[in-house]
Image (cartoon, rainbow, N blue to C red):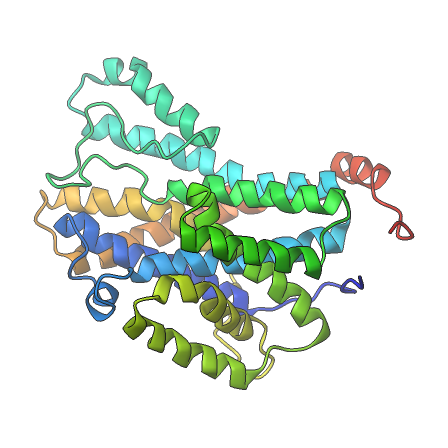
Length: 351
């Protein structure tokens, strides 16, 4: 099956990723300040079908499916691809987890020395670094007196699935099965897994990532249709009334997101001109927001948590990009990675 030639650059992705990250902080602000999300606007508008931040996570995965597939197809070098993907996730996460532990040291009711030696502190680091699950608490740490008052990193849960999808693309690419046909099959499997609740979180998120893969190959041959994008937007509204918003969002929201991201006629603000702050904003958002709630003694409103938390998290995201993420990404072009990857690059003539 024909593959895309060249690597297209779509600046709109930067703005959409940043917007998706902000939507996560917005929804989390309600949960942190009030202990639930019943007053979150999308919850009220959709009769509790979902929160805005969850749709933001779905958009993240859709765009990731598109860009990660593009990354492998442009390099056609498994080791270079794997190095680039791990360098994108882990350096910033390691620093963020270390900061979370330091925040915990300032909040914990335990003596600091005991806190730092406590097995649950090391379990928090180990579980999140090894992507073993969503480990959310640190010993003796309570930020606010509500249902999420002990949660340290409310956005970390999605990262392990992102890594799983990287490995899925790597396996398909290495086996020379990464193409439109495989992406469509995986999308169908993902839709079934989402609808019938198969495969846990992996199955739940699979259709969102794979619709991005499909849209990558579609975009290689033709630009997504503006008319279909409008229809998709109207369809999302219709599915709210039908009670199927989350299930339908994989196809409808995925198409709309990639249309906006790749459109030549719609020019969104160039959010990436100073750097890609979306990942840093995403991982630092929750720790900063719970610190804001803690600083207010648990009396902060959602908008205080959101506005102050976003401002501080954005500063950390900028620092993360310039001091950690961008230097780490430069390593992917290092000669050691390049020589290893080139030696194992599949022949263009291979089927």
